[in-house]
Image (cartoon, rainbow, N blue to C red; front, side, top):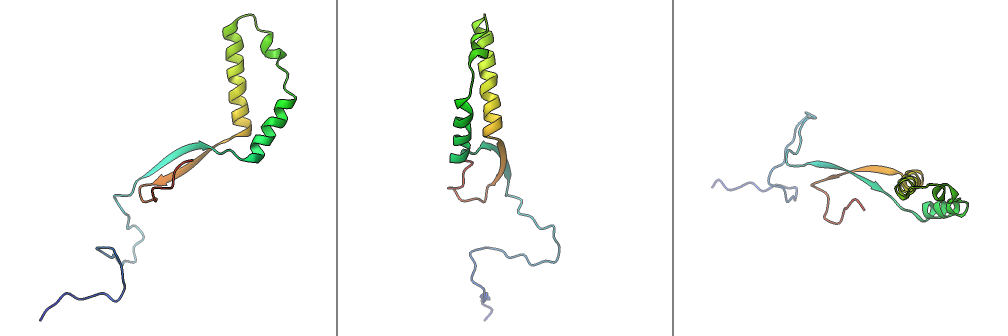
Length: 102
């Protein structure tokens, strides 16, 4: 006599919350901020164009190999920051498996 009422709306959810309040949140959903460097063909071309005019005499002027390596390492980081800027993205636990920072 008292059967389970069927909804007219097809859903896979166990519960539907209908409210006027704006503070309803999914407490199991978490967000992670990732930092990436996107690489595009235009950025690669810009870097190659800059490398054409690179003068390595600055690096060969060091007497100590460690100082030359440190200068080279800093130069590489400067190029990365100039041509491939760090960007931040947010990934949640609700994203599909194929959504990755890369």
